[in-house]
Image (tube, rainbow, N blue to C red):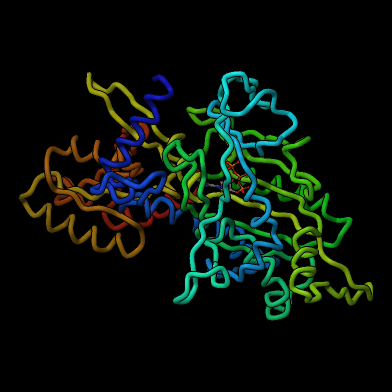
Length: 446
Ligand code: ATP
């Protein structure tokens, strides 16, 4: 399967089955903004739940936060977003890198055929310079003047930094500790695209870990390991995951070290999460701009210091896309093409389909009772329309790992057929044990 075709097929499956729709489609759509349909919202929610459970629920040293999208405009001055993103920028259409127009590495004049991209080396791929700020601006209150300008946050991290003392004091945590947050972020990307990979409105899952200076290197390595493990546990093909280290000009001036978790998409290796050793840059800047002391008092050592920060920053939409790309496959079965989303059962939007084999002989009644019982515990779906083979195929496309069929033997033997999505093998399981059986399979490792 050619790679572009794979993306086209995925986009079409996502629409057909209700994973992802184009925003405002009946009006022609809105560029790089997407809506999640019934299956998509369930899939993305499962991603976020798994992240929250690994980062907050399972740990004593991380607290949760849900900061507002709108923040004091000074926050974005302190963070560098106001000044950092208002320069003339040029884009490379080939490798999608973005540069300041005055980047000394650019040879030739951007916008002209002679200009050469400093990263991929392509000639003529650089756009004309454009004044560009990545942040969406709006106005607070009734007057549209500069005093009332506010921004839609371009990252969730700043909400964590400005609340770090509030969380520290109210939770009675001590360093080292972290704050985790999931929320929307907005960037007026100039080179958006690749479906939900790069969008103008997206969700981030970010965690900032506050550590004593000098211990940041060790924590950075630990977090790298834990985060890669988390991605692997989603069932992703390990051969398609790799580290990419930022070096040279790629490394932000304040960052001590930065690594991206990359996945091999049909359009190349791309970042799905960044792990950054940010030093004391963020708290230092907020201390300077707010005039408030943000130091931590270490009682044991009887000294004050500004903690260093190790950040893990993942995109919920990108991880969702990664799961979809990784899971998509086509197989030839009895002369027909079977489209399957081989999603890990733990993230699959629907865990089990419940089907009466035929609409008679008491099968629908029994299947409905089973369905009502099951759905108290797991996400499942009842379907009694069409041939059983078609119903299985629909569930294959939705990524549903199990199909439970109530048939003649259910009535006589009190057993059901459980069909496995990947192998298409069928086995008989006692009616009164099927709920426990599915639950165990869904929560356990693959
Ligand atoms: P990129 O280089 O791809 O633009 P970035 O380095 O700007 O990403 P960060 O600022 O480190 O990204 O953001 C952390 C995470 O947020 C990324 O790893 C990605 O998963 C997600 N993310 C960032 N920008 C977008 C976007 N426009 N659409 C979807 N997800 C995004």
